[in-house]
Image (cartoon, rainbow, N blue to C red; front, side, top):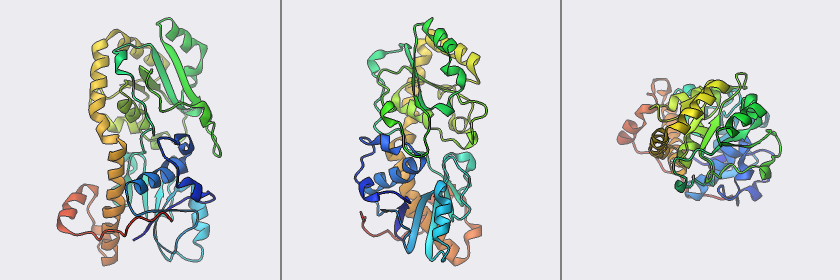
Length: 335
């Protein structure tokens, strides 16, 4: 069954030639970060997929939930032979979809909703290991609205300066259309010694946010000070995974602790190297190829047999693979 990645109102001819590591500034909006970036990685790996701005007549269509209304309008003449896979991102569920991809495990059920991590920061440049346990530069990398306002205040900068720490705000306001990507340097962690990302209490759709700031820190080789978000907590296996802070005062105390304890710093970096293996580009690619190439065909075949409701959860995928043969898709297409 053909897989089409759908981006309405986009010049897909130009987008097909993008390189995620080189052109990461083109991948900031939700639709591009999820739909376009996934297509680019899959196509590069030889997976059979298309990128299109029009819905096909049949096959699997992967789209961002932001475009659910546009997709629904285009389907008024009937669903035909389409299987709709919506990437929920930071918005509401797409009820028109047959399946959804969600950003964290708390909203996945392994039957209709499947957790696939958002891609790590493309083009990421890890911290210079020669910096040792120095804690002289702390950074926030993200959009303005996802950072507690205190951390943009003069008081916070004065606190850090008194301890010899520079505060780097690698951030711009979010724009639904267009970006200010030229002002950002998100991939560059070479001279960053720790990351801090504390969301405001009223952050919209907080529980549905991805854990990218955490696993980007692991991949970059830096400790992370993070707010108690669902996405971060569900990945936590050890106190070394990240330092949880609930607000400004907790952030101050935790940063002082990290600065005074080089051994803690070393242990967090070493632990992060191990955890990062689950969230490399290759690891996320494997999740996507399994979902599109094996899991969804299995579930669709079961639905056709009338056994859909009795299907086991995601944890049984590998047991199923040992018992059944999945028909492979045709060679990759770039049209």
